[in-house]
Length: 528
Image 1: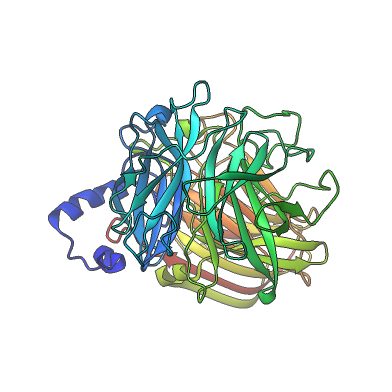
Image 2: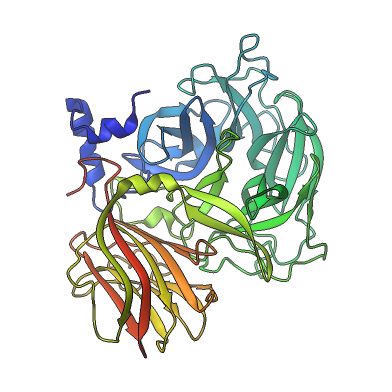
């Protein structure tokens, strides 16, 4: 594969590449986030790193801007660096075996499957066939396919399906990884109100190991989807690790609709910390119910995130992206040529706080290559009614700020501003809440639940708060206190709304540091 960054920035694209680039000038088109050049996209699938490439597969309807669940494909893009992406043709296509729903890809480095040459390796995809007729009345089964050419072409296994449901119609979204201690492949599978674990020596023959979640109260408002299970260091200590089980919870078909919904409503994500022995996941909290659900994102628009398999041990990071959308209004978004985008890639970590171990997320370091500094300030006190950023005009930016709490009761930024449009990213000091208010972000009438103010609990640390903000043509992602509190929201302002304001209410505020960077479009010359 050619160097994707050089392809986008060299200005020496072929005429066909230049004609395609017009897609990335569409209204609301994200300039920092991956989106297919046209039509529908939802869950990230098959996240794998292999021979220098990050692969991003995803749920894709290549012929429509709305999901066609009966003809779902795996879309495909690759990247050298998690920033610049090259869209490839759809990878795995529906057929008589059914639509291609969510799943994962692994590097079969020891050729346990027998699909590759002796002493060779390749990629194996494990996915849900929806609408499969192999078992009457239970249309969701698990199938596999393999690639011998770095994911460019795929061959479906003649012995599919490799796993059938026992009881429920909801039987999908396999996340598979190799467990070194037991020398087995492990599959985490979403099965309505629980996660089922299966094990296999060869990716073809699977046996049931255990289940988790059906007996835990308060987490069953929506059907479970897109699980992930991974081992991760605590406080970056190599000898201290925990396992995290991650769940996406849908906005429909819940076992108990009275259970708490995600903080911003609709679909959302939660996580559990515990241990895994190769067969069973056990919670650190051994009570029958959790004191509080641990939500991953307090905005509307972060869902179905899964981590990349195959990242080298010398790198050591756990990295994921999520679908920047919400099932409550996903099919009604005001973008016309395309519908759906991914979040920026994020590294996930576990850190210890007074209240216990918590998951945090931070933007991957590779994004720093996009920075073009605009303004830098330190040790400055601001008063209500002034705007020290009135000279800045930008439609996409990275804002990194640290404040010392003074007499103010609220502080924040107004982004994508014009005379009648703004999105507010603020912190309520009295309530100790981070928030995004998108009620005046322009195009909000396409669904009654879109216009909203979303809040995340966040206490000051040493009388200070820290914010890292990514603003794009149609989204805002906020990382509070170095990734402890996250809010991800789509917005749809006019492109001409480019004003920026730092505000304070009720008193003075001290800026410890403030850095504002413009960000280069990942589509090269696509920006206006």
